[in-house]
Image 1 (cartoon, rainbow, N blue to C red):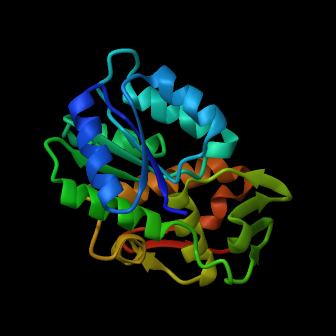
Image 2: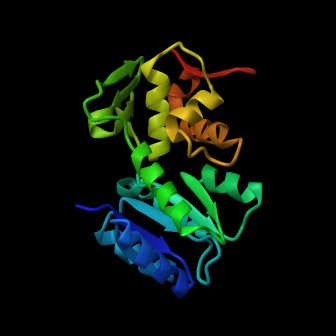
Length: 225
């Protein structure tokens, strides 16, 4: 079944533009002009990706992102911010709240579709990949599940990919550019601090296992017991 894309934007013209072009690209689409409509939809449906505008009449898009990330069943759904705000502080804040990518208005529909494909491709590691256990940390790619000392940890798709990448070669130090290349390939994020923000989020969520992610100053990151 085609991937389901849900979008929240207060401009009906943009939603119509997205509807026509995303359906042409082979996606299913649901659009909403208010956050409450999106929330009601998310109670019964789980989209494959969310497009969120930041400047909304009834609620800030960053608050919507924060609320979605608090929902256990939606924690892994990729989010792309689509907004006229182009300050780096806004981009970093969006990433800190769990967004996976950021596209500024006015945008090229072709570029947006390419970024949607890139984010969906980056998803989870191959389901046939073997589970990884490092100390109290357990990663099961097939089930897209992470536990610390047996307790489940909800990660975004990008956070999961970074953790799996580091843990797959424990002790090996990866530079930020290597991590970016693994996640995005030619579709690299435009914010230099992207990896640092995701790593900080990971550490907060991993709790007692946070210290396993080591920062090698001037080089990059690694995982070790």
